[in-house]
Image (tube, rainbow, N blue to C red):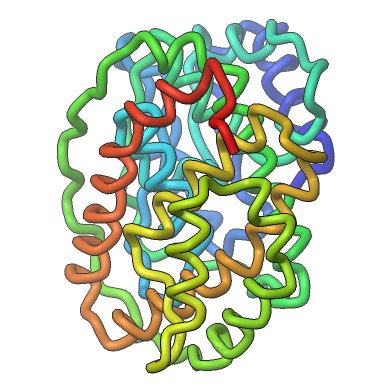
Amino acid sequence: YDTGGAAVRLILAAADLLQASAVVVLDPGSGDFTPDRVARLATLQDPSSDLLAPAHPRPPNAGLLVTQLARPLTCGIYGRDLREPLLPEFGASARFTAHCAQLDFGGDRGRWTTHYWIAAEALAGQFTIKQVPLGPRRTAAPPAQAGLPTMLQQVVTSIFASIEATSGAWHARPAIAEEPLPEAGDVPPATTATTALLETFASDVRNLYEIIRRILSADTHLALQAAAGHASGGRLPAALWVDLVGEFLLAYHHRVMLPEHIVQALLPLYIARTGTFLLEHAASPPVRVEAAVQELCGMFELIRPRIIERWAEPAVR
């Protein structure tokens, strides 16, 4: 990711200064730089379109930060199922570009380290988003697993900070039904081993007991301990994961401890959730994987009223 978001902010500011009719930002890690791809992200002739976002079919083991966290949480908070809310690449209209260029880029610096703030601004404002099916996402080089803690820190911080910054808008707006996207093609089967992702679930929960206890409500904390200590092997089911993410977001907003410590504590729980998802869907066809992700999005939508209710005042611990 672009540290501090300086590069994309410079691109948007330059496009606004030059009064460009549209701007396309491409993913430097993409293996699909084709004229057609650029053209599809630049089709903003319709004045009602402000942001064109890519939509990729995901095999079970790809983009888990998106399918298990970024996409469903975005759907729950903003009421729109944006399939790639981290916007690895996107097209923006002149109107939306001008809006982004005029933002105050002070405040929480972590907000700008991914492109999520762009999606949040579009979802929170009076902007029209259209999703462009681009087929399977191919990257020039796969991300290193060793970089997961840093990546999760950047992604979760940018998401939580953006949700916090736009809370005045999403509190007041009802959920908006999103039209389904067409199928974008077949994807290769998943091959990633999953059992190692769950091996330390129970010990991680024990080791983080005092930190997690300060973040979670008593009921959710008990449910997490029960899941991690299950006799048949700990798994982190979807419903519990939704409650955890919602309460971590609230803890971040209320600053129950240093924000970076809150995000760090989410890492082992995210790993347990991805391990659980892969155990359940490693052999699933793309249609079933997409259905599972949509189901998770629906669960996040159900907790939105609870998040709004607790946003103004911290929960009593």
